[in-house]
Amino acid sequence: MASHPDTLEIINSRYTSRGQINYAVPDALQLQRRIRRCHADHGIQHGDIVALALDAFLRARGYPPDLTPSAAGA
Image (cartoon, rainbow, N blue to C red; front, side, top):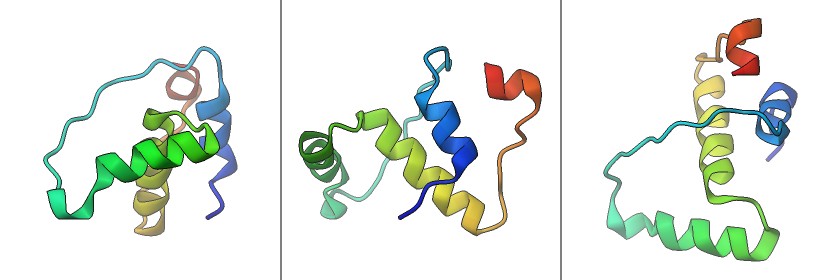
């Protein structure tokens, strides 16, 4: 899966502020276990895995982020 260049720039920025998201997801999907495994296999941080996946999902459905200069640098 190719990530959007804007998303990668934000993820890779040293000074990106981060916030928590907390949603109940079905245990049967084993998302926490799979995220830990992906991190172990590829070294991608847990939060970055979630951010990349959600960003791709929302962009595909027509919900891109509003990357104003203040939002992109925050």
